Amino acid sequence: MVRRTALIGVVVLLGVVLRAAAGAAPCDMPPPGQCPQILPPVQYDGSLWDRETLTGNWGSLRDEWFNKGVLFDANVTQIGQGVVDGGKNGSWEYGGRGNLTAYVDTCKAGLWPGGIVKAELEGNWDDAVNLKSGGLMPVNSNALFPIPGGGNVALPDLSIVQFVAPYAGVQLGKIDTMGGDMNDFAHGKGDTQFFNLGFNINPVALVVPYSTLAASAIILPTCDINEAIVNFSVLSASGTASTSGFGTTSGPLYAGEGRVRTGFFDLTGHQLVGGLYSAKNYTSLDQRLGIAIKNQQLNQRDGTWAMYYNFDQYLYETDKVKGKGVGLFGRFGASQDAPNPSHYFYSIGIGGKGLVPERDYDEFGVGYFYLDLTNPTFAIRNQTQAFLRDEWGFETYYNIALTRWLLVTPDIQVIGPAQKQQILSLTDRRTIGTATVLGIRSQVIF
Image (cartoon, rainbow, N blue to C red; front, side, top):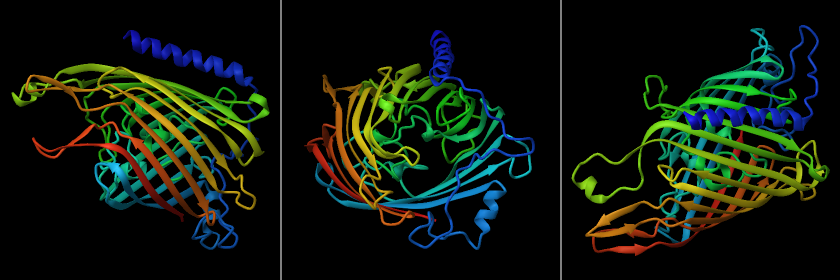
């Protein structure tokens, strides 16, 4: 109870600080009867080389829908990847993921003001090399959603955001939680920026399910979501993308996060801080093999907590409005030493957008992460053995925008994997060395 109260207090205090930092300017309300522009416009018209989507405007139908508050996003991402040195297995794998997301602006749709309804459908296929690098952080984030393993179709998000005032709203429903821990240079599901999960979200927060029932309070201290946002959520600690989530009894999870835009050196940047506490009953990582052999109950732990921070800061900008330039990003996180294996986490890197002349939509990134692990131990033949070690990773990618709707991304990763040995049999154990992983990604936006 003390931790829950402290977390709520931190979130409330953060909201006050962010509002003061952002200036708390008055909210500009639209004229009576006019809906504010909430959904971002998309350039459907134009030549095949200039428009944002492959299939265009569908005879002006998409623009008509947008004017009525309806927006569809559809894309397919494919990845070929192989462990070319070290790791556990050197074979190449191919897989992909399709995503269809629909948004409805309830004001423009003529229903009621202030609401956005979201529905997201995902499916993935075939294989990834995530189990072959020896790393704890998946080298192909895209293959994890909606469910790892391929051959899955699910609805990870069906929710509504309803604003009750220009600076306050609520979110209800089943939500896709990967929108948290936002960072301009290192974020997402491995389909647009870095491949490795360690650069897309802070792993100390991965006790939060990817898709789960949630209720959130949202605060916009300046009425502008791009300037500052604070939210506090109560979530189910056991949600999955393939189930509705109703009827689970694993306990609630409390999370709070705040993000503010900064203007250091008259350059764009963001600072984010968040925390969570879960009341779920978890199985402890630190077990003894003898207990499992005797079919005794594994050690249990009630609850866990985590806190995390990230920043992005441009060092040079060519276009503030379109977000072009180069800058730094970084993350830090800490969690309870069990059950989350990610005890401490650090990352740092450089990202850039639209720096090359005539290549306005290209992106690149170079990053390094270090994962300080809670190392489970097992008693085998009167000896206590640890089978994990701290993990580190390096990744660089270049996202080539052949057109605005066709992106091709070569990627290189070097991973110092957490797994020490590959146990093939009682007498055959192989050391898992530093893994070099090459990959190529393509994304088509329809």
